[in-house]
Length: 108
View 1 (cartoon, rainbow, N blue to C red):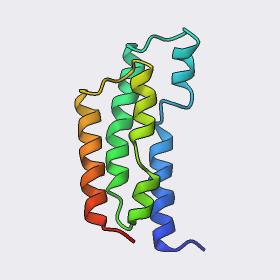
View 2 (view 1 turned 120 degrees about the vertical axis):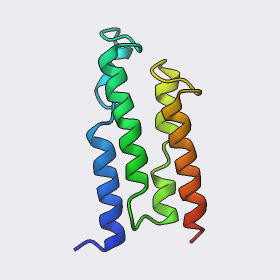
View 3 (view 1 turned 60 degrees about the vertical axis):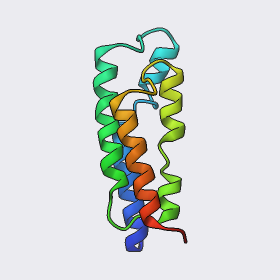
View 4 (view 1 turned 30 degrees about the vertical axis):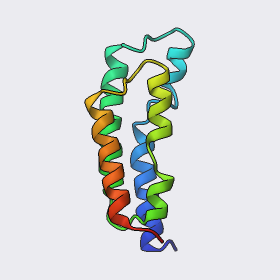
């Protein structure tokens, strides 16, 4: 049986994965079947950014958990593909939330 900390981490990962545009949609962009500016991709990406931010705020996540959930690498892939930009409000908000939560979690 998972501990409450493990359950929090599993919940956060599950929440993020459900709307993750990297898994299938980004492949469509790379294959040229979808444009980075496609409205459907934008909608999924916007939803994912919000979901990611909420998942990071899950009660019970430790400093170590938050480091594992760092959104920066995933956002970098979307930025490199042209789906997001560094100055996108959702990117800025998610980065700010992550940094704030990480600093409040302290170190282990």
